[in-house]
Image (tube, rainbow, N blue to C red; front, side):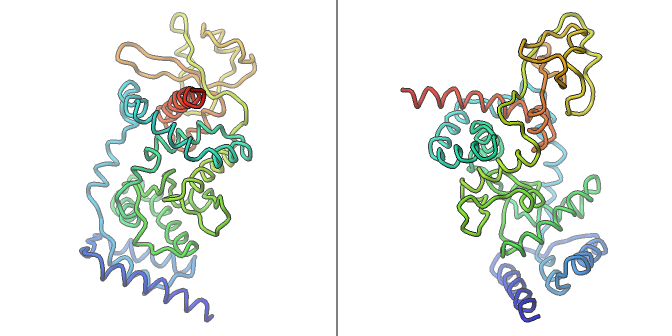
Length: 335
């Protein structure tokens, strides 16, 4: 009981201190009924203190610009525009440097989880330019804005807000301090709170899972995420393919999970690499270029990348950046 009281006082003192020191205005959350309902849920299901949470939410600010950003994600671009954001010299060279600076942890995580070093590097490169752009929004503001003021995805973001408050208690963090993306994603790998709680990893064993400033923890966390989503070590990811005629269009379908056997694609006049077995399940994907389209087949590991961000554009950008970084890294170490 005494520990519980001390924990409440600690959490409350942090919240009050941050509120009084920061020059922030009181949030104008229109749907106070929804806030009260959320607070009650946290009290009943997770034993938070009601007064403590009431004070906390008084210092939360809704951000209209976050709603605007959610309505125009980069994944809505055609591939030829999206690709240019990530496959550029500065990001490739940044990946080489990040790899050089973190050789030990990258090699260790590939050995432990089977996730290639270049894939881990590319994820962090696509997400935050190797930790340079981790976001400038308070996580609690972002999650509250999207949870209480964005009905389209309110359920998801309220769940993430729930997870965020729990992880702050678990990690002894002031909930008003962590910053991240406009969607509430955090640190170098841009983990949502639920992903942080489930997959963030303490590489050094120092009792902290610091994905904001500790590259080793970020690298271990990404590798663990992929392993838990069933990454297949030493397996291929995706291949560019060509097709004769237009029969291949029958195989273009919604979803991202491999859903058609190679032998069936061959029957639709899709030319596949020789190393793909006839019974291999594949996903046929089409990517818009300035003139025409590129066809790719994704294997199970391509699908695993889309568990990080549910977009084939994202997964292909990660794959191509990883290949470019690996090629340049190999040149650098052999010079």
